[in-house]
Amino acid sequence: MPPKSTIVLEARDLGVSVPGRSLVESLNFETRSGEFIALLGQNGCGKSLTMLTLAGLREADGGQVLLHGGDVHTNPRQQTAKALALLPQHNDDMFPATVMETALAGRHPHVASFRWESANDFAVTRSALQTVGIAELANRNVLTLSGGERRRLAIAQVLAQQPSVFLLDEPTNHLDPQHEIETLAVFRKMANEGATVIASLHDANLASRFADRCLLLYGDGRWDSGPVDAVLEAGRLSRLYATSIEAVPWRGGNLFVATGAER
View 1 (cartoon, rainbow, N blue to C red):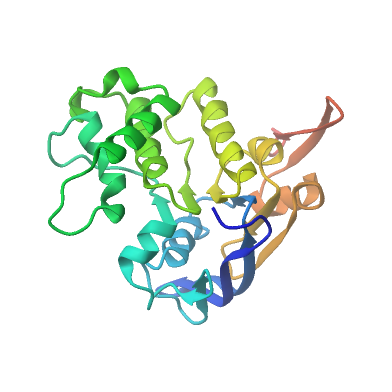
View 2: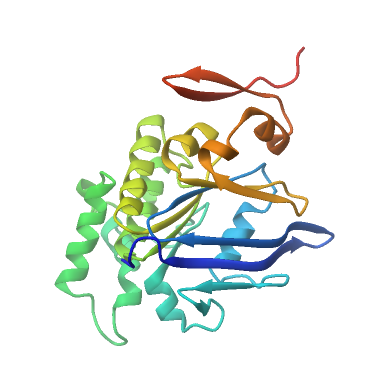
């Protein structure tokens, strides 16, 4: 992992759009090693497209993304894959494979051409499966897994990749409350150990609990960012989600409750 507080991933005047609509305009945002950043916004505001753009898997509509100082689009792809892992919002299993085989795919950036995975690759992958609590499923066919088990497998795959940057698009998708907390605690620990974590979340309370900073996307080009304690407040969240949200005092902090319109 890079030294703590090193700038790792940087967006410079970044633009993200879809035909007929600008989602993010002139995003200037830098992330440092040791940070957990929550990406928040309504459905359709551009969170997933921004993740893909930061990963270098989608052309930006202006601006630049730098990973460890180099342009993410011109860096060698294997070098980028060693440094950055993207957890997509959904995983499609087109072919039958075992849980171990699927998780082992996370090691591919570290395996030389025309080489097989090493004993170390298997050990790293087994450890990742253990971390997410599905090591006992290693020989199971992925097509037999529940949605939550498949999500934890996808998380194990990016953990096995051992990057310095994790881009997590709705990592708690399909997870029950226990596994939501456990999963975010894993990535909080990774950040504490020097990784950079950017996770799109729907729950401001989870962001408040685990993140250091927030990046808010309003879906019309506007964005906002700052420390969790400064950014997560009822008025701002109400504007972000276009519904009434109240802050309820709880354990020395606040719980954010969507109250919606009065009937």
